[in-house]
Image (cartoon, rainbow, N blue to C red; front, side):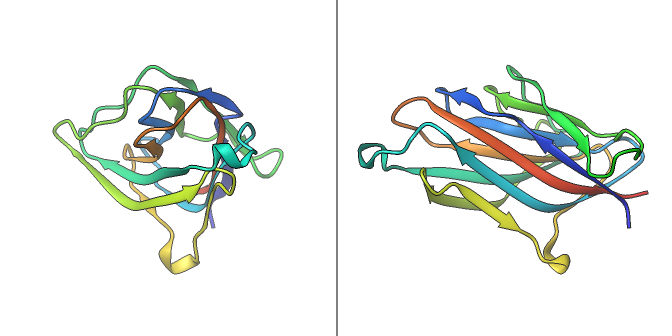
Length: 160
């Protein structure tokens, strides 16, 4: 078993979509497996804000073009004292990752009520496997009626 890490965006106001809430790139040596993905929000609670949001779970591979316009995401070890991760992570990229001369595949397209958020707990046999230098991306797609304060986090296992 590898080391477990949490990668999260922390609550960020999002008014421009589509947007990559999280882009997590494996290090040059170690692949990783995704255990869980959560997207929640803290600003839309009334019935008048009852809209569907589109979430896309993506895998970028090969010579893909990383997104831009965001900032570094937080990476935390699940166990204190574990080594620092070899991952790099970005949050809230307003220019989304693109295939470039690599590939960008939508693995799971989903529409969810904004108040309910999105959650995916992978069973062991369905965990996404991300190869070294490839990326796992959580995006909000389409459009939103107004700014929403999103939080996205991924629990993953770095192997090696």
